[in-house]
Length: 350
Image (spheres, rainbow, N blue to C red):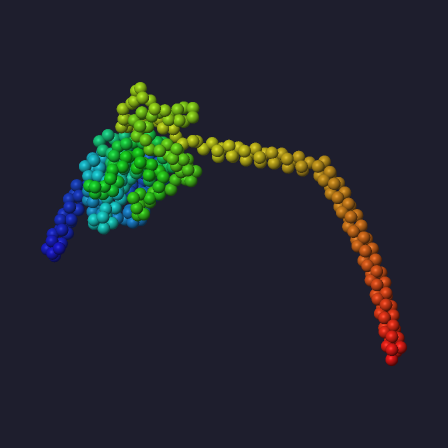
């Protein structure tokens, strides 16, 4: 690029900045104080837990500085998603490490602090599947883990196709499978975009339910129901219901409630109570007296046994000593007799 072109681009950027300032449009920033009706979030109030690299790239991108600053309402951002978002990849290849339009608009929604009504409207939107997908991404990053399943449970079998990666030849995936991926994985289409962790017990319950109920679009359309007794799936062939494109009443059963922890806690309480009662019974004065008597009797028995053992050991040692003494005497006398006989034999021979 020539020097004249660089100067012209800088002058144009300055003119655009002056025009935005004159119109009262400034860079979009996180508010100092959250509004009272904002959706409660658990993520970092500045970075949205997007990661340092992705967050810094979003803030430094010209699209976020120029275009997203003009979008001051949720409806304008929804229209922008409808017009320009065609995939959900966090970073695009060219230019290098530049954030995608979808994630720039996602962070713009976070800076506006959406309400629960705004999120419900995005999740139920009928114009574009990407509006719904970005709404679910917002929930995955911001919603508390206890309320996360209540938002996702009605759409984990949604068959509406969506592109996750950039490119005209990129494969399409049902929205339900994308939501299942958000609930079960820790990374989104690469290591540069990490998802918040879900508590282990809750994640296990969600994963167990999803594994026992694999993806099936008929469950979303109403062609398959759930048996109330055993939770078995029953096909309803008489009156299959049309596809539902909004937030419908929950037909998919939620994961089992965490009753085990309660039962364990109650069991532990009962055990602790029984132990305390047993301890109080054991610590009674009569019990102590009996213990002391039994201990004294045991000590006396032990002392008697030790005395008997000592006396027996002494008797054995004295007997062994006497036996050894006799043996030594006999051996000496025998050796003398042997020496006498040998001398006599030699003398008579000589």
